[in-house]
Length: 306
Image 1 (cartoon, one colour):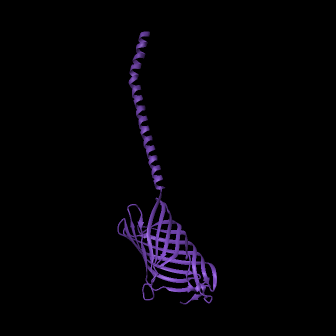
Image 2: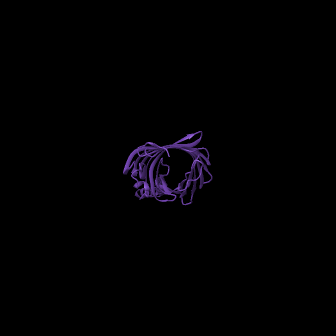
Image 3: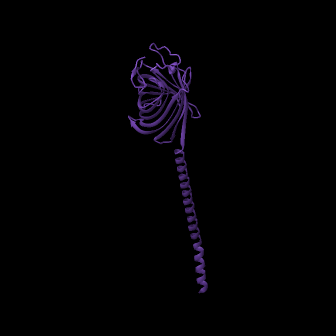
């Protein structure tokens, strides 16, 4: 009887071994599947983290260019010594897919035949973009707030009027400006090669004028708030990924206390070329469309007729 019982138990063990082996193999396969899924999840999270870091990377689009202004008389004849040449360098700073854009620019101005003239301008600003879709095409509105520092001076002035006791006019030696810029903008992309843009620009200016002599007095300083409004509208023609041309009608209304009240109309053209390195070449010019209306003001803000 004991022998029979032993045989039954032994037989049961032998029969159970394949079942146990199958269950062990099944558990092992499940663990491999779970492990593979976990590895895939980790790789996915890693890629998402890398993409997020890439999107948050700060980007700098730098540019260089030259601004040139040329004055002419009533007959459109060039006025000798009126050429103002201003090389500049700047950058747009942003993150991918961000609605915020930061900008900086440095500009230096040189006057033709006037080596003592020393003018430096630098500015910084921030722009918020508000995207929209109209008729199936994309566009945006923007608001830029900025600050610009603008100052010029003559280290010395060689003018006989400075030593003339009878002279009652003004001789300005320099100027310092602190400007607040408020600039709403609009942009609409009609096609890959054509887009439209418009902008209003309001510049509130804290000005400090340095007179070598004013109304017979030496070393006179005048400080005031002035304003310049610059508004434009136009189109951007994109020829390829590297070349584009920006054409605008530009209206300028200057209200500079103690200096000049001026209204002008320009055709404003900016050519852009983007190198493979990402640096942009941006020369531009402004062509007067009509003779501007000017009202010159003296140190007492009284209109003067020249």
